[in-house]
Length: 539
Image 1: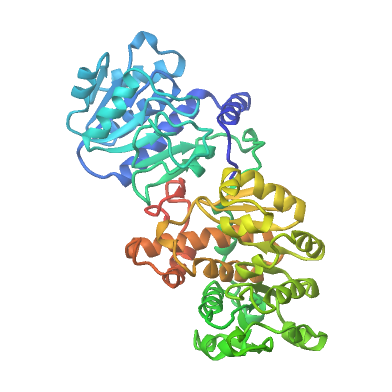
Image 2 (image 1 turned 180 degrees about the vertical axis):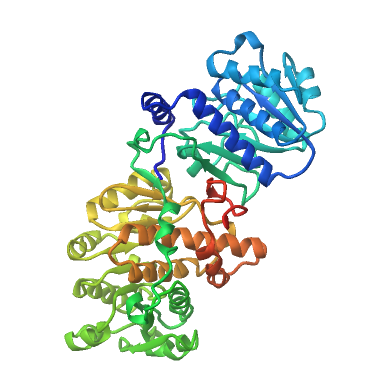
C-alpha cells in the first residue's frame, strides 16, 4: 500500500474522474465507509453530531451523517458556515441532509450556536477540513476544536483530524483536533503513518477503499506500508510440510553474562515458524542457552583464550572460522543471525568481521554484530555483493555505524536509511518510532505497529530472531519477509500490552503473543485496512 502526499492524493482523485469515477461517487463511498466504521466500533444510541466544513471533507461528513441516520442513530449536522457558501458535491450532500426528516441540520455562525449543537453529543464526526488543508486552523474551526475537546464525546476524524497537515512526518500536531479514531480513504498519507493521531495507544487509523482505481494511485515518495507484507504469512502451509521446508536458522551470539540475548533470539525464531533453530554460542553459556526450549539445538563455540582471569569474557575464538569447522557449523543452515550479546571485547569485533567475510548465507546482523562494523561499513558493502544482508540497528547503533550523533540520525531517518541501504546494498531496519525497512532499491516500508511497552531490554533480540525465521521461510522474497517480520513483532507487542500494562510487558511476553499477531488480519469484514489499532485486526 503506497503512502501519498496531499498533492498526490489530489492527483489520484483527478485521475479517478478521468477514469470514469465521479467526485460524487468518491464522496458517497467515503461517507458511507465512515458510517460503517462508526456504527460497528462506536455502538450506542447516543447523539451523533457531524461537524462539517464547507469543502469536500465536510461533504464526506454529511454523507456519513445521512447513512447513520438511515441506520437509526440520532443525528445532528453542524455546518460551519452558510448554505450559500457550499459548492458542487458538498452542496449536493448538504441538500440530502436538509431533506432527511430524521436529521437536525444547523448552520453555525458562532461559538454559542456550536456549543448548543454539540450539547449531549456522544459521538462527533470531525469533518471540518481534510487532506488539502494547510495549518493553522482559524476562526470557528478553532472554536470547534476546543469545544469538542471539552465535550467528552468520542471523536471519529474524517480523513484526518482537522488541523493536521497531511504531509507532516512529525509524531504530533499542535493545534489539531483530538481524535479517538481516523478513517481515511484510498491510501494513507504521510501523516497517517508517521503521526500519532489518536488519543489512546491503540486508537484505530483505517483506510477505506472508495472506488479509486489502482492505476490512479501514484507516488514518488518511495514509501509504502509494511503491514501489507504480512499476507505472505497468512497462506496456510501445505499438508505435506516438514521441518526441512521451513528453514534452519543459526543464531551466532552470546558471551559471558549475556546468555539471555541468544536465548531470546532463538525462542523468537522457533515461535515464528523456522523448521529448525540452532544457537551457536561460547561454551561458557551453552548450557544456559540450551535450557531455553527443548526444541532448540546448541552448538558450543571455541572461546578466545584469556591472558588474565578477569579477561575471560567467553567470546568466540577465531578458531571457529577455520574452514573445516566453519563448514561443519554452517551445514544445512538457511539463514544466520549474528550479534545479540556477542560483546565487543577480547577479539569479538574481529570474529564478527571475519565471520561475515567468510560466509555467504543470508545474514541478519544486530547489536554487537553491528558495533563491530562501526566506521567499517565498506566491509558490509563488500559482503552484500554476493548475499542478502539485513541490519537491524536502533538509533544509537546506527549513529555508531555511520559516525553521526543520535540527534543527527533522528533528524533525517528516511533520508539516511535510504542512502545507507542503496549505497551498501543491504536491507536496513532502522528501529524507533515508526521503524523503517529500507531496501537496496531505495524503497522504504514504514511500520505502524508497536508501543512503549516494548522499550525494554531484549526487544531487539526478539526482532532478530523473528526476522531470521521469516527469511528462512521466505528466502525468495526478502523484502516482504523482513517487512512482515517487523510488523509481526510490533503487533505481538501490541497484543501483549493490551493483555497487560505497558509497564509490565517483558520482551519475552511479546513472543507469547506472536500467535495472535499471525492470526490477526489487517483488513476487517467491512473492507477497511487497519494501519493502526487492534480492535479490528481480527476481522
